[in-house]
Length: 395
Image 1: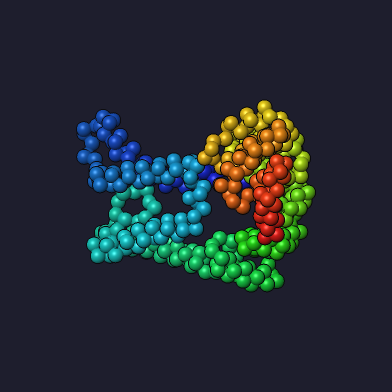
Image 2: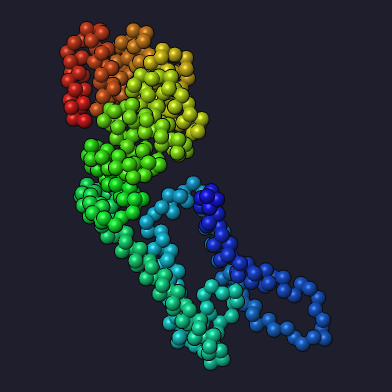
C-alpha cells in the first residue's frame, strides 16, 4: 500500500506543520504589519491584537516544534519513540497544561481556547458565550488527555505477554501469555503475535524447545511472518539444526531483506556447516550493507582462513580493531592461519588470548586441544577436551 511506503517522519512532520500554522501566521503578521503605507484619512487601526508576550510564546512554540521536527530525523528518534512512557508523558503534559488554564480562567473571568488561530482571550463579562465555550473546550481536552495518559500508564504496568524483564517477570509473562491465548475468540493475527511473544519469553528463559514450538505454531498461522521465521532460525541454530536455520533465514530475508542480522546469522550457520563460499557471500552482503561491520569482517576473515586464503583473511583481520566486537573471532582466524602453517605454538598463543577474554569459548578450547595433541602436550590437551565436553553437555 502507498500509505505503508510513507516514512514515519512524514507522519510526524504533518501534525507539527499544522501546529505551526497559527503561531507562524501570528509572527508573520506581527512583523509585516505596518510595512505597507496606509491612507492617513482612514480611522485609526485597531492594533490591540499585538502582544509582545504572545509573540514570545509563538516564537518559543515554533522553536520547540522545529526542534522536535529535527530530532525526528536523527538516529536516536526511533529508539526514543519506542519508549513505552513517551506517549503518556506527552499526553499528560498537554493535558495538565490544558487543565491548568481552567482554574485561572474561572478566577480571572478570562480564558483563551487551546488550538486556535487567534491570540485573543474571551471575557466572561463581555463575551460570555465564547468564554464558556472556551472554558468547557479546554477542560474537555485536558480531561481527555489526562485520562488517556493514565490509561496508557495502567496498560504499561499491568501484566502483559512481554519478553522484557528479569526472570521473575518473564515467568509472570508466560502465565499472562497462557491466559491470553486461552481466549478462543482471538483472531488469527493476534494469536500468531501472542505465540511469537511467548516464544521470545521462552527463549529468554532458555526453554528453546518450547520457544521452537511457539514459533512453529505462529508460522503455521501466519506463514509470511518474517520475524517469527527469523526468531525460529535463531533457535534452530542454537540447537545445532543448521540446515533448518538456513532455510528459515532464507525465507525471512526473502520477505525482509533489510534485516542485517539475518545475513550475519546465515553466514555463521554456513560457516558452521563448512559451506565456506556461501559464508563469505553472506558476510560480504552484510559488509556491503554496513561498511566495516566488525562481525562481518572478522567472520569473513575466519572463513577465508579455513579456505587457506591468507591474503584475504589477513586483510579482513587488519580492519577489525582490538577493542571492537569480533576481536575474539579475529584471534580464532589467526589461530587457524597459524595451524595451516603447522605453527601450533603460535596457534595456541592466539587461542589462549581468546580464552582470556571468554573462558567458556568452546571453539578456542577445541582448537587449542588439537594443537596441544599435535605438539605432544597430552595432559593440557585432555584438560581442554574435558572443558569443551562439559560446556557442550551444559548447553
